[in-house]
Image 1: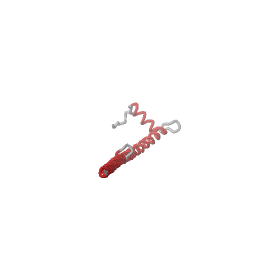
Image 2: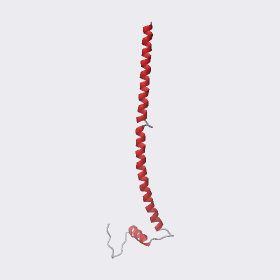
Image 3: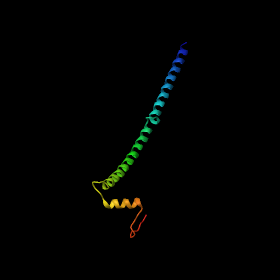
Image 4: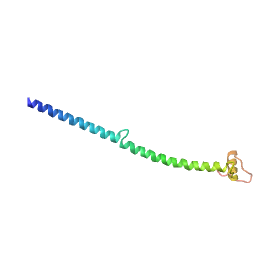
Length: 101
């Protein structure tokens, strides 16, 4: 009877070990590959860097457009810029001008 109890105890120990090892592998896998895992964090950081670069480009473009808008405003009028924009939009030129595109 004691050998039967020893077999049951050994089998229980093996089952606990297998279940514990399986749980450990699951949590390790989730920590590396899961939705909040290491690889996802690396991907998110790469996306953030790309978006920061895009933001810097958009800010530069916005500054250029704000400058042109200010130069065409009622309080400050740049006649050269106004002439350039009018010619480009209307597609007109003087007779003595050469148009290069």
